[in-house]
Structure formats: structure tokens, C-alpha cells
Length: 297
Ligand code: NAD
Image 1: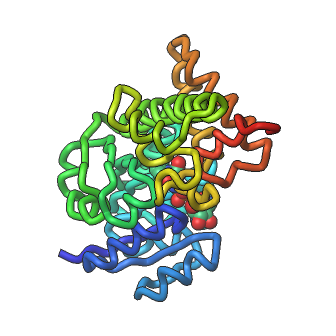
Image 2 (image 1 turned 120 degrees about the vertical axis):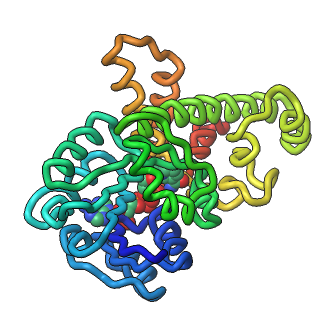
């Protein structure tokens, strides 16, 4: 059944996710502060709103796919924010990766406006967003997830209920911690092998069939030309940007510090992504962290 959906944030992820909702027959009203991103999706038949509030008025579900906590807070609040456009019975699904405490604060305001909220951050990158095969980690009430399963399954294939509101974000941060740390390990392994004369293609062929195999190796081998569709083979075009991984590690470390959890690997990896960003690789795929280990870098 077609639903009226407001979609806020049409970037690397939100653009293809909104496209898949349109393809599935839903009626979209879209908003982004970037006019070019809006035009691309409007050309597929979506209505264009002039604000987050306007994208929310008259729809059944509002979906956000924004970069970070501050963007979600900005899109939610104020006279033009989506909370001002909510009516009783509207559902908000925030699919951005943000701080779980911010999720819960936004959810309180959404509930106070008579609406309900799920968090649903995703994994699978831009390729998963395009092919509608994302893993979606959902926090919030099970009945609400069930009611919105049709929309979520138009964007992803693995839709997993992680617990109460904010718990999707917590699980997502844990997942990205693994990917971030493993990527640094893969980068060091290739830097070592290449420095000692190993053929990077042979390294990939061996490691991808051995105990070193992992998602960053398979999808993000950092040596150009080894894996044809890796970011490294395309000038490190994202993919998932270094600055977003830096943000996610910061969120994981902040969550860990609340419970005084030592998180040595996450902390070291975060410094590596900070250094990569300082070198100008912030908007490149996070596998560009390997560029820090190139001779003369
Ligand atoms: P992006 O920067 O490509 O897109 C974000 C969009 O939000 C942009 O078009 C921007 O103009 C818009 N925006 C910013 N502030 C806004 C506001 N106040 N109102 C309306 N629009 C606003 O980011 P992305 O790569 O699409 O990532 C979105 C979220 O998904 C992030 O939280 C990220 O961590 C997460 N994520 C990304 C990937 C990936 O591979 N890119 C994978 C998994 C999860």
C-alpha cells in the first residue's frame, strides 16, 4: 500500500533510499538544504518541500538521513523543523547515525507532539543503499517497526529489531567500531607487505581466503587496482567518508566513557582517521586512511 512519506536528507545514502521508496510506489515529499540533491530526486516524481516542516505536514511517515547529531537536531527543531509539522499518528524514522542520547531527546519531543519515533541507522554503504540491500538496525517499539516494515524493506534486506529507542544507534556504533579498527589493520598489513616486496594482488588472494579475511579487505582493499570496484581503484571516492567514520568513532568513545569502558583500539583508530582528515582525505572513502602509510606521506 502506498504511503505518504516526507524524506529529509538526500545525500550519498538518502538519495538512493528515497529513490527506492519511489520505485516501491510511495508518494514522497522531499527536503534537503542542497538544491542539487533535491533536483535529482524531484525528477523521479517527488514533491519538493521548502523546509523540514513542510516535508512533514500531511505525511504519514517522516524519514531523516542526515550526517550527524547536530544536523538532526537542526532539522527537528524551530519553526521550520519537522517537529513543528507533526500531527497525531505520524511516525518519524531517523536513519542517520547519531548519538543515542540525541535520538532519545528527539524522540521525547516527537512523542510530546503526539507522534512516535524509531531509530533505524543502516549498514551497507552507498552500494547497499542503491541496491536496497541495507542492514537496518531498528530501535523503538516492536509494533511500530511492524507497521513500517513495508517502507524499511523497500530500502533494506536485513531489518533487525535491536531494542528500545536509541538501541539501533548503539548497535550501529559497535558495528562501525569493528569496521574502523579492521580497516586500519588492513591498511597496515598492505603497507607492510608492499614495503617488504610482496605483490598486493597475491596478498589479497591469500588474505581473502585466510584468517585475515574481513569486510574492509573484501570491499576496501586499499591498493588501487587489486579489487576493481574498491574505492582505492577509483581515487578513493566514497563510499563511506573518512569524516563520517571519525564521527562514529567519537560517538562510540563518548558512549564508552559514560560507562568508563577502556576502548584502546577505537581511540587509536580515531586518531588515524583524524590524521587522514587533516591530510585532506576527510571526504574520501575511509579506506584512504591507508594513504597515511604511503612512502613519504
Ligand atoms: P551526505 O553528507 O552524503 O548526505 C547528507 C545530506 O543531508 C546532504 O545532502 C545534506 O545537504 C543534507 N543536510 C544536512 N543538514 C540538513 C538539514 N538541516 N536539513 C536538510 N538536509 C540537510 O551523508 P551520507 O553519506 O548520506 O550519510 C548520511 C548518514 O548515514 C550519516 O549519519 C552516515 O554516518 C550514515 N551512513 C552513511 C553510509 C555511507 O556509506 N555513506 C553508510 C552507513 C551509514
